Image (cartoon, rainbow, N blue to C red; front, side, top):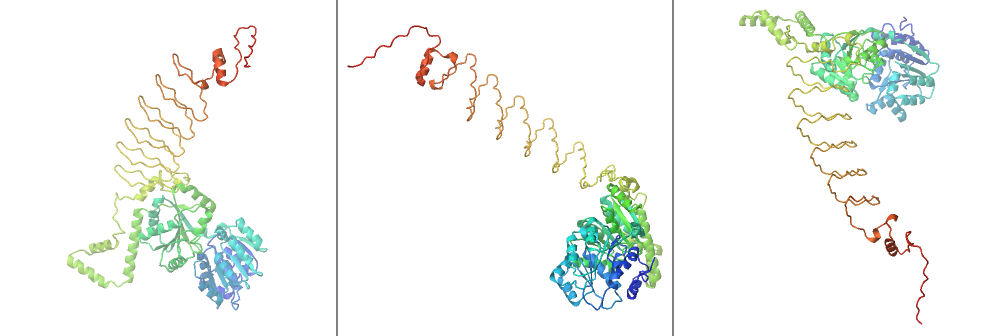
Length: 639
């Protein structure tokens, strides 16, 4: 492996690297620095935490002309935190370069200090795409003397929707320049940018085995959702934690976890997208200065968070893919430091754990939450260490005289006085344990999540079904709500128990139970669009008539024996045939103009009357006698 001097790094930069503790370059630095020093374009693929910042910052500083107070390099970063972290790294590496100035520009900060700094003159600008575009449109950021453009965490930048912004910025560069792109993954969108904006780029890929994952001790713990905070608290007690970052999936979860840990006495703060920029910067400054020990954050909010004292990373919620897991644990174990990573796995998430192990090509070590006995042992060891350190470093003559005086006046042994003082100092931490002392967490894990080996393939177990321990005889426990998307059958009511009605869920169909013997229940109207057939009337029951609905055809029921129903006129345009007269029935006769006769019923008299009424001459009937025609009598006329 080559040294930084052999790579061609300038002496003033070497001095700063030596003061920072950099001895030998990482694989990405060893391969990238010579390419960038030679002025070639670069496409580098490496995971988070491999030293990418120094890989492009050192060549940029080597090519800067300090006398020219114009932007000569632009570094685009996806988040404000990463932009600040990169700018701080530039400042550290340029410690022995007098007159060098770097400026981070990002959204959420007032324009005025950024504009003043640009007017005074800066050599390197580190910013988010949105704010860089704003300054280019304003004309406050000049690209006339630009030599180099770097896209840091390019895949994350494109995932956040900055693809068009990045293209627009690259199109504004007027002259020849060098372009470097660093990314953890190389999707198709990254390849498209490389084909369009990189010229004969050198490609470097650092394999997963060369990342800092191998320098991190990785553990996982199988616990249910409700037990995570308790298990994490016990883990914090037995571990020597310098600084810790806890990752959750949502902004709400960051606040909830931070509040619960703060209630347990830990110095903790949350970082999420709802936090204002000045508040975020204060939190990052406090964790770096040692005023905070724990930061709870989401993936996006933690981008660019590089704190040397971070010794532990906890995945409170398991990430959905292995890349996110590597990004998370890459916050620790950087630059040769050793770190620890803990993954809290719910029993139903066994398959997701297997996917992560398959991607890493290594097995994570399964651990269980520390027991009460282990906590006691750790607390006693810490208390003993504090006492020994106090005896070795403090003047205790006054306190010895005080204890001797108390022992003499109260006739109490010094051992009892020491025990009383220990009780007063540690009564909240050191509890007296016996064989009957219950460890609720351990009991619950025995019934549902004691070891990772038991549930390594349990990805399709339903949450909450077997995870909760059975209730003891006579024990009454508070109700535990079912998980999101979980279906839990309702237990049968005990004898004589009356439970409040639980409405059906949205879209749920629940058949109505049968009425009990002698029970009369209120009528429940049918729902909208629901068809419900009418029940048959009971024996001797007379129900009120229900009119037919609009457009509904309902045939008329047959009349009962001996029943006489009122006549219902035919509707408009309705044809209704006349029923036949019953036996012995006499019906009223219709008027002449309304009667119609069939051919078989006609008679000469009836036919004549019919013709008179209608004015039509009728022909003789078929049964009239044949005979000679009589001549017509001459008509009489008046003379």
